[in-house]
Amino acid sequence: MLHMSVQSEPALGRLFQVLGDSTRLRIAALLAATTRGACVCELTDALAQPQYHVSRHLKTLRTAGLVVPERDGRWVYYRLIPPSGALGKRLAALLRTVSADSRFAGDHERLAKRLALRRHGRCCVWTAGGVVA
Image 1 (tube, rainbow, N blue to C red):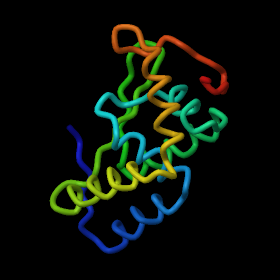
Image 2 (cartoon, rainbow, N blue to C red; image 1 turned 120 degrees about the vertical axis):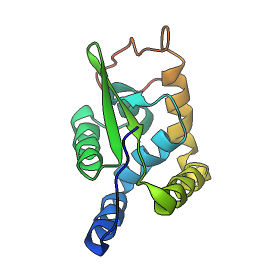
Image 3 (spheres, rainbow, N blue to C red; image 1 turned 45 degrees about the vertical axis):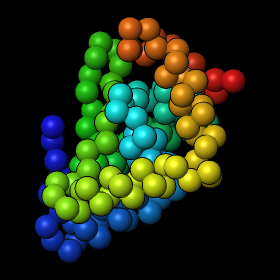
Image 4 (cartoon, helix red, strand yellow; image 1 turned 90 degrees about the vertical axis):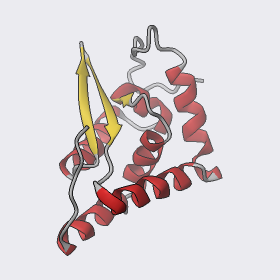
């Protein structure tokens, strides 16, 4: 498993700057709540956001070292990778706490419905930005 090292003040500041965006915080909270990771189309449906919007925020999270992509066929699954050490443990705990907040309940319900559509643990549905009802 990859881990980001946040040892300098600018790196720590950048980490919080990245998570300061509400969409990126929602993505990180969703990924913190699942061990399976999620692909772009699953996150798109969970967040009820356009694919390009979610992809742009995932790229920022990836550049910051907070998520890691794992390609599986035509899909790319993203997993949360918090920084290493004590900071990473606290950040992961914080994201799980944020994830449990009632304001994120709709995101989690939509993601759960979307993940339930998987076959053999793999995404098999593309909704082109539609929300799974």
